[in-house]
Amino acid sequence: MIPSVHHRTATVDGLDVFYREAGDPQAPTVVLLHGFPTSSHMFRHLIPALADRYHVVAPDHIGFGQSAMPSLDDFPYTFDALTGITSGLLRHLGIDRFAMYVQDYGAPIGWRLALRSPDSVTAIVSQNGNAYEEGFVKPFWDAALAYAQRPGPDTEGPMRGALTPEITRWQYVNGVPDPSLVSPDTWVHDQALLDRPGNDEIQLKLFRDYPTNVDLYPQVHRYFRESRVPLLAVWGANDEIFGPAGAEAFGRDLPHAEIHLLDSGHFALESHLPAIAELMRDFLGRALG
Image (cartoon, rainbow, N blue to C red; front, top):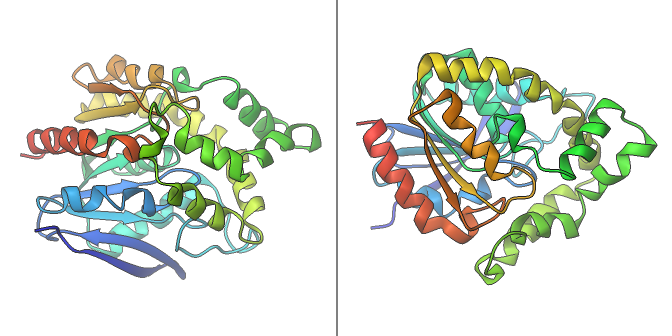
């Protein structure tokens, strides 16, 4: 029997936070944290693949998906602020211990959650969720970091380009040997939300805040070494945003990390859902008991 998935909204710090939830709340919790430019929509198939055994919660970050999109005047749009909302949602739901799946933007949010409360995190699954500078692939990150360090007309163009339909589609199909496995609904859905009035400035603000994530990396690496948290990396090896060196680097601080490079790209769930779900179920079954 396929588990039912509930689509809910909670109020956190006065903002509506949309989340998908499935499974028995008494079971171990797995929190799924999405990346740019998507939402919990990216987990629509993974959630029922886990929810027979786990309590699964997948929120939309503020400014993404079905969650609130306040203006820049009303919300700071930093990774610290996004983490605060996620932490507030978990408190609202009574979740104080959880495993987490992080991808892209979900990774720096997840790392902040772990740094704030190391004992809360029971296990980590990283799918192209970076924690090492080795993971940054040129030329994407040369342009992104140049804009963050020197925002202005000369550096903004490439980052506005990252908000276009062409690049949204590219993120989904680049590096995927059989693009027919990737539903066009993915990039059409994401683009419709990216194109909301005012969202471009929100995304540019988050691009400018990205170096704060890199600044945290030494603390994150120390957290890995001290906590010895169980970690599974399931990584699209052909990703030209976060490359496979970012996955392999986990082994430096977590010698027992389980690292699997998949023949896919940035959104590997779209082409490799069965493989990722199987790896996760095996890993979580051992890590969570």
